[in-house]
Length: 324
Image (cartoon, rainbow, N blue to C red; front, side):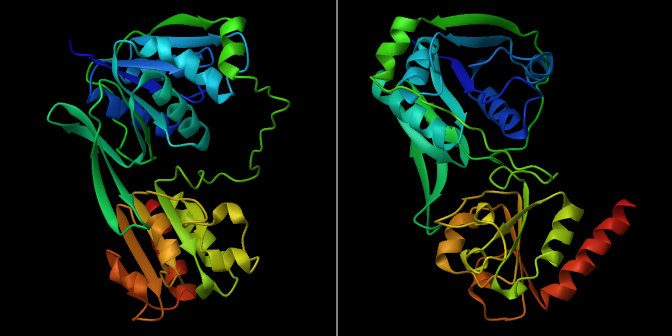
C-alpha cells in the first residue's frame, strides 16, 4: 500500500513562518499531501501561512517532558509517521540528531543535507554536493519511509494553487514515555543566543550572500555596503576570521558554515578548497578579485577582475539607483 503523506517538521510556529519553512512546504507538496508537525501550538500567522501553502493537517506534538532532548523528540515524531512516505526538516544540527535517532527507531532511510529533493522511479531522492564540492551525488531512499534534512534555498517558495483550511490536532507523549525515550539523559539548562542589532538574514538561510576574504585587508565596509544594498548576509573566509576582521559566525567553509544561496558574491577571496567546500553549491557564483589567475575564477559563473574597494561600492550604488 502506498504511503502518500509528506510530513514537514517545523522548527518554530509561534510567530510567522520563516522562508526555509515555506521552502520545505513547497518541496513536500511535490511528493504528496502535506502534514505539518511542530512541538509548539501554531500561531494565527503560522496557520494562515500553512493554509496558503495548502496544508490542512497540522499536528501539535504535546510532550510531557523535554522535547529538546533528541530521544524524546524522535519518540514523539514516530507515531505521526505511520502513513508517511517522507519527513522533511530544516538542516539544523538539532534536526540532524533527531532524524538520525528517528531512523534508528523506525528503520527509515536517512539523507542529510539534501540541496534538492524529488523522485526517482517512484522513490524519494535527494541531490547533494560532497567531498568539498568535488562530487555531485543523487541518493535514492529505498525504504518505505524517507527522512531528509534539506538545506535552505532548495527551491523558491510557491503558495498552493488551492489554499487549505488548517485543522490542528494534538498528539501527546506522556511523562512515562518521555522519560523512557530520554534514556537517562536530563536537560540541566538551555540558553538561546540571538544576534541583536542586525536586519541581515542568518548566513545559513540567506538567499544572497556577500563574502569577503584576505583581499579586503580587514576593511569589510565595501562588503557590508553591497550586502545591505542586496538585503544579503555577510560571509567570510577562514583567513579573515583568523585575522580577527570579522566574527567566527561569518566563516564559510568546511570548518564554518556551509551555504547554498541563490547568489554568492565573493570579494577578495582566492578560492581555497576549504572555503569552496562551503559555498560551491551556490546557484550563481560571482567573484571579484584583482588577480585574474585566482582559483575561484575556475568555478564562478561571473568573474570581475578589479579592486573590490572600487567594484563593490559601484555595484551597490547602481543597485540603489535602480530601486530609488
